[in-house]
Image (tube, rainbow, N blue to C red; front, side):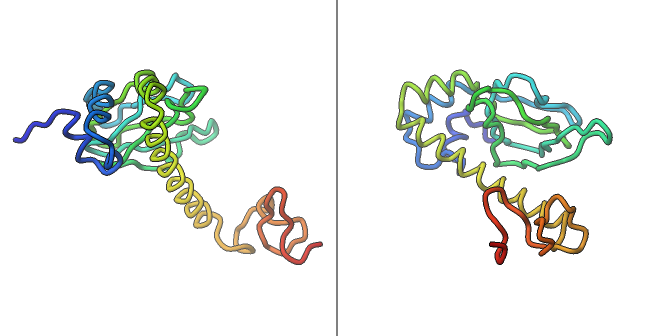
Amino acid sequence: MNIRTIGEYLRGHPFFAGFDHDSLDELAGCALNQHIKAGDYLFHEGDVAEHFYVVTRGRIVVEAFIPASGPHVLDSVAEGEVLGWSGLIPPHRWLFDARAVAAASVVALDATCLRRKCDADPRLGYDFIQRVAQVMSHRLQATRVRLLDLYGPPGRGTPASMTSATGSGEAARPGREPAGSA
């Protein structure tokens, strides 16, 4: 078995590719390994977001709890992916729940420590937030695709709230009128 330090793990991880050795050592100083049993929650909606996570083993699902029907899976994060930008952006509270669907391990970077390191080294902070923004963008695009799959093409099960008032079937967007409605 090959045992690596957290710094060595981060150096080989795609999210951290391109960070210099000293920056990765600084980030590793904010980190610890954490193990989650299947079915256990990593965090809950509304709680203080204390960590940024790198999933090293297993799978974590991000869920929204709907009072009338219970938890609904919004996303799934697997080995090698990152999770937890809420700890980096005020108000530093979780917007959803995260639960391990199988035994999982993560590198948990303390969000307060991470924010301090990013504040102390603006280049590191900029690079880190740029990477987080890329992850957010990819996840939002994936969510958009899932919503399109869920609601289907206009006219086939698309809720009225998602179509324009003109009845054209073209989705209404705030601040934009559908084509042909001047």
